[in-house]
Length: 354
View 1 (cartoon, rainbow, N blue to C red):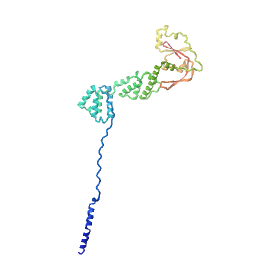
View 2 (cartoon, rainbow, N blue to C red; view 1 turned 135 degrees about the vertical axis):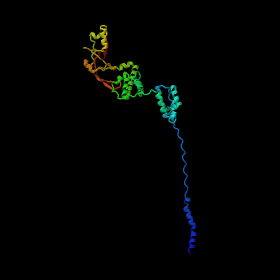
View 3 (tube, rainbow, N blue to C red; view 1 turned 90 degrees about the vertical axis):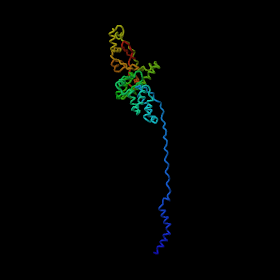
View 4 (cartoon, one colour; view 1 turned 90 degrees about the horizontal axis):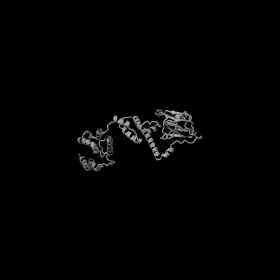
C-alpha cells in the first residue's frame, strides 16, 4: 500500500506526454498535406469546317430516256464530293427533284407530296426514276442497235465511243463485242488490219484500229495539200539495174486483143468478157487470160514472183532491193526484181504495168 503514492506521482508526471503521444497517434492526418485539386476537364474543340469542292449543278432532267443514267450519275458524283452538304437521304432526294423539269418534275412532285417509298433514299428514288424514264436492260432492240452500228465517215475514235456506250448496256461477252466492232469498221480499216494478227481483245482492236486510222487520215491530208508531190513520191521508181531494161515490147498484131471494145465484137461477146471479170496480159510472145486480177491497193505495180515465173517474164535483179512496208510501218516483204513493161487489158481498157 506504500507504493501507490509513488506510482501515482509517476503517473501524474508522464500523463501529459502520454496524452500528447496518444493524440498524435490518433490524428496522423493532421501532419499530412491536403491533396491537389483535380485538373479542370478539357473544353471540347469546335468541329473544324471541312472545305468541300464547288461543283456546278447537273443539267436539269426533262425525262429523256437516253439522259436518265447520265443525270443520276452526275447527282451521285455531287453527293460523293459534298457529303456534309448532303448529309441526309432526304436532302439528296430533294436536290434531285429540284433539278427535274417537264414531265419528270411532274412525276417527282407527285412522289414527294405522297412521300412514297421512293423518297426514303437516293438509291430508292434512282431505281424508281430509271424504272419510269430509263431505257431499262438491253433487250432485242439494244442488241439489234449494237449489230447495226457502223463507222461510216466518222473516225475510229468517234466510232469506238459510240460502240462502247451501247456495249455497256448489253450482256455480250468480250469476244462477241470484239467481233461486232470489227464488223462495223470501215472497209479501208479492215484492209489495213489484214496485215496484222487479229487482236485478242476489244481494247487491243480499238487501239490498233485507231492508230491505223490516224495514219491513214494523215496521209490523206498530205495528198490534198500537195497532190503532185504525192504522185511523184509514192510511185514505185525502180533504180537502174546493171543491165538496162529491155525496151517496151510492142503490142502484138493479133486482131482479137487489139480490137476489144470495138464494133467488130458482137454485144454478146463483149458482155461475156465484161461479166466474166477477165483480164488479159499482152506479152511479147503470147497473151494470157486471167480470171481474177486483185488490186492490192498499193501505190506501185507489184506482181507476185511466182506469176512472173509462170508467165516467163524476164526478171532483172534490183540492187539494193526495195522494202515493202504496210501503212503501220512493219515490213511486209522485199521487192528484189523488176520486169519489162507489161500491157494489161481489163474490160477493153489498156493499162501498162511499168
